[in-house]
Length: 266
Image 1: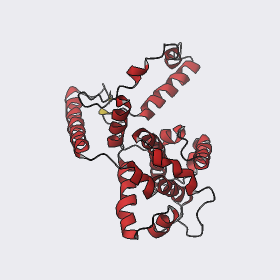
Image 2: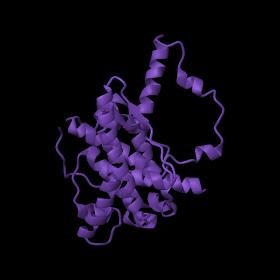
Image 3: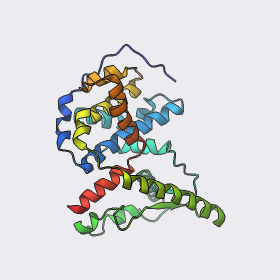
Image 4: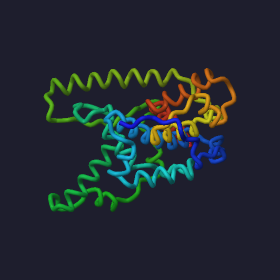
């Protein structure tokens, strides 16, 4: 594993003016931007834990480098970093060995990739995902219905039918207990002040955090605060911006629910 260095200044692509429009961000805008950063950070953390250099992502998926470059040129263009999401899924804490677990986007990506390969290799007469493209578009009002609403809540799950009934029941009970606890926790939390997230320099901080992990350079919290324009004490920066970033990068569930509720009201 490589060592962290102290010999680099902040990168040329980092410019605070690029983030000014976050003042107008709604929950859905924040969610889109934060999902991208979470995928990249999860992938880099997974590579580091596995003893692999960050550049390994570029070797196995060259498109990851192009995606990261594009994000840095236009940090509020939330077109996505799908290749990073795939790598992050490989190191997900929700192991594929769990008989009952939440379905993630990476699972859908894997299924689509496997179906395409099976069709290409002749193991399947057609690619079912391409057949889905022939279906008519769903009405907009259906597309806006949230997965997590006030009266009903839907959570897509993956179930390994090879496990015994006893194992599946035990696994589902464990998942349900965790899901109910998280749901109650979200209902007690206040709606975030998104304007303060912009003022904190949340997205610039996360982008510098990605850069630190990618380049393996060290920067103190004081240096990071100064770079993102945070003008309060270092202790305050750690307790607000850094703590908020850790919480969001650990779980976007609350923001997902708020974004769905916001979209549904529209």
